[in-house]
Length: 347
Image (cartoon, rainbow, N blue to C red; front, side, top):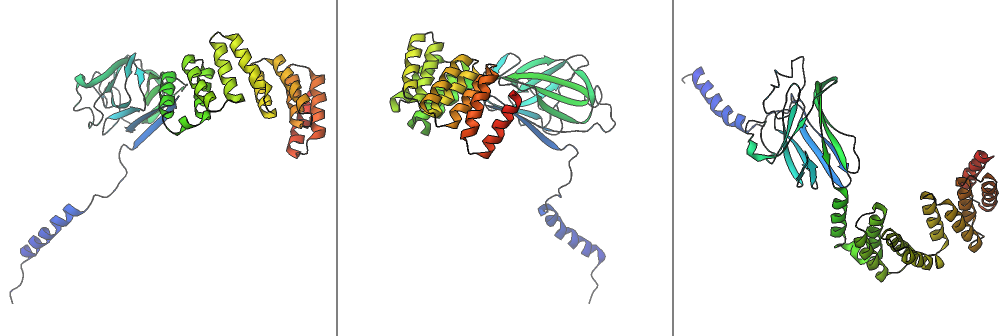
């Protein structure tokens, strides 16, 4: 029998190994620039930045690793993206909800920030200025050393947030603003086309939001009327009364409020009393809590609330008298402990 040559065996091994190698997935290893994301809710708007985080690794970053005057992916690997769940304003321009590629042009004294309608590019190699959604300028400032590039969403309010990049010893930020009132109104209208439209509570919640935020008062009154037609009660009558008052109809507001209070339960009177306290209408709150003690003298809670109102008015004597009354009536040990603490503060 002839011996098989070494060359033949090698050829066979290569022929077998080649398709196997093609079928074998690559091993997972730590990436040089790990992926990261950061999110922040502004009002009802979700803002998310997704990016990869290169490290300094002792290199000179600005002007060398990242050249000045050239479009940069603002991260590593795929271009960084920023996503908005609702319309926003960036650089004075309104942008629809969506995902945008986030590029920058770094400079020694000024950066250009670019949001591109193309959000799935690898780096900035295929960047096209014609696809810009908005451009704005930002001023870099010095900061502490940050080895891996980092995005944060800082100083959030109900209407804005600052998108901030920090890498090496440079920080660059730009604001994103949201018309939260418009976003909420649009959301409420959409929600009221679903199951909430079949209950008085849904319409009243929408109307109460308009009242609390002093926004779209006519729309709020329309929603309050829908609630009242389904179930006229203390809550929605008080909501509409507040809306009428803000609309400049004090008589209509007073009449509706009186009608609501005439049939109010103990908890409803108590709730309205605390609302008055929150509005710094302490004298009105005291009168309401006093009425509640007369109508419900056997409830320790009415005396406790009246005591709190007197304390808010600075009348320690009356506050102590009513707290002691509440303490003598309640059997709840936790409430007794709390009331004793309030008495200690007053004495």
